[in-house]
Image (tube, rainbow, N blue to C red; front, side, top):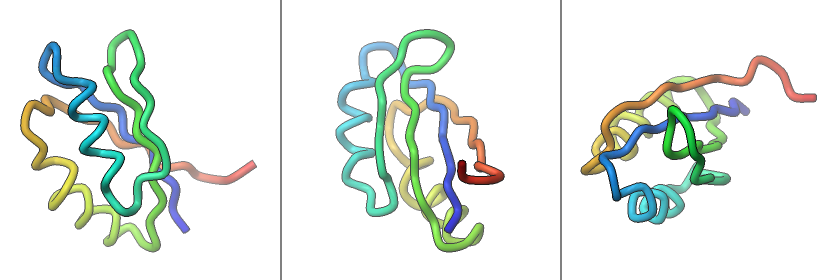
Length: 78
């Protein structure tokens, strides 16, 4: 199982609606609204790297008013 954290920047004023949309995606475990350089932090679990790439390209990256992302893949669980 692969755990990933995706840091998201949204267009101003849209982070709450984007967070609601992200929570509906199958692999998403948690979505937090944060303050600072990023607007949202998404935590997700995937079976494979390919599964992660497909889900990211087909569902997450296509969301309107999502400006940019940074994906962090966990190297180990503690």
